[in-house]
Length: 242
Image (cartoon, rainbow, N blue to C red; front, side, top):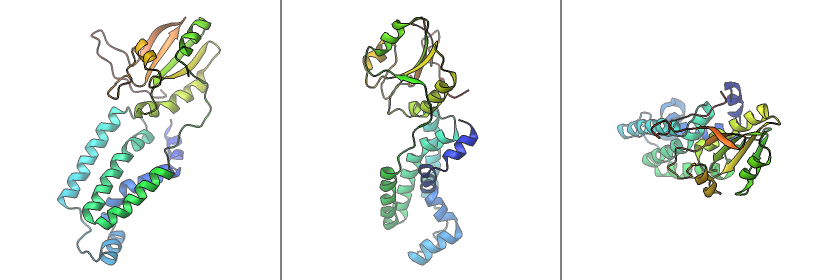
C-alpha cells in the first residue's frame, strides 16, 4: 500500500478511535487543559499533570514490546504498525488508568469492550483474482489440470497477524498481474494441516513460515518465500507490494 492509501484508511473509525484510545492516558496527563479539568476539577486531585516513575516505566516497556511485536509480524506499512500495536497500547492504557484511579479505569474498560465489539478491524474489500482452495484435494487437482498454468499460492492461517497484513497485498497483486497462464491461489493450512505438512508449511503458533508463498510451474514447486538456506535455516522475508 502507498502512503496515500494508508492516510485514506486512517479516516475509517476503527483506526482513529483506536489511536485516540492508545494515546488517551498520556494526552490526559500532558495536555494542560484536559489534565486540569479531569483531575483538578472533576476528581479534586492535585499535581496529576506529570508522569510519575512507574508510569514512565510502563510506557517505555510498552514501546519496547510494540517494536518487537511489529517486527515479528512483518509489519512494513504505517497501517500494519498501528494495527499490530493497538492491543498492546490499549492494555497499557487500561493498566495506567486503573493505576491512577479505579473509576477512570472502569470507564476506560467500558470503552475498551465497546470498541472491540462495535469496531472490528477493516478487511480488504477491493477487487481480487484469487482462487481459494476449500478442499484438501483442490490444489493438487488444479496443478494437474493444466500444466501450462503457473500458480502463485499462499499458505496462510486466519489467526496469524503476518498473514492478515499480507492478505490485501496478495489480493492487489492478483488483480494487477493475474493472466490466463498465471493464477493466484490461497490455502488455509489451519483448516488443512495435512496439506501444510505435504508442502512443508507449519501451522504452529510459533511457526515462522506463515505466510508462505510458493510458485508452481508445470505442477512443480520452483520457488518459495520464505525459503531455507543451504544449512536448512529459514531466511526471513518480509512481504510487501514491492
